Length: 293
Ligand SMILES: [Zn+2]
Image (cartoon, rainbow, N blue to C red; front, side, top):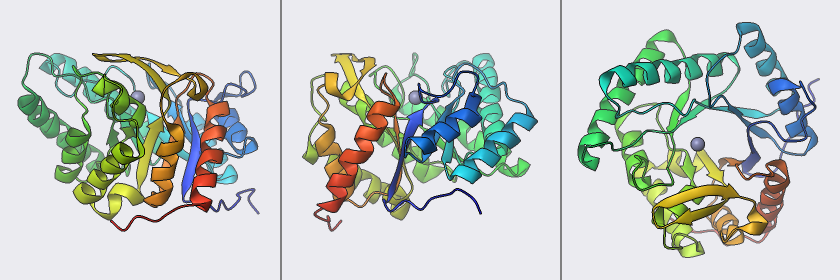
């Protein structure tokens, strides 16, 4: 018998990176165990500097995730830019491939990455260059038998690729691509305090549903946190209690729209807020007013 527990909620909650309370030297296996002890059920492995993990370690992470019923994702290295100069792109491409290959071995189903920046291109050109490169990466992984969903993330600064519309469009055009929607980034990206209400969160969920159909809201992979920002966007992530983000409205929207998938917490206190998110969502779920999309 496995120790897997059945969770009644449509959404799994967890952290990006190991919980802070993971025992020292526990590594990702310790992180998986700690997630379950906290009553959470998802973990995004933060391979954000580089991918350095042996096949043996991948097998151990995978076994722990199965034993404890923790859904795994990978956050790929930051140094990936789909719109970079060719030499830079070939290095970024290797990082993205490495994250996907090792993540798949470790039992991760979803590989999150930052799509890059516009550089000197127009948004339209940057979008197309990125689309073609991402399609090639997906094709390479498919030929290798690496079955993962690649998740370009919505980004918090206006100079960066990764609007909600761009991540939806890549997902429409390329198989095995779906968004990682970071709602705090979208709030920060607006830069004026907007994108912070039940109506605005609902409008984003409607865009996902209309743009991607069933996959949009039933295979959701969201990041959430408090956030500090200027007019140009994101400054830093904040704990929920210290931020202006209306998290109660956000989780009510997720409950009302019947979103299924994962929410990963990226606040500085990680698991404390992940648990708060899950509790807030559970209350909203019990009192939901279903939306008829
Ligand atoms: Zn990220």
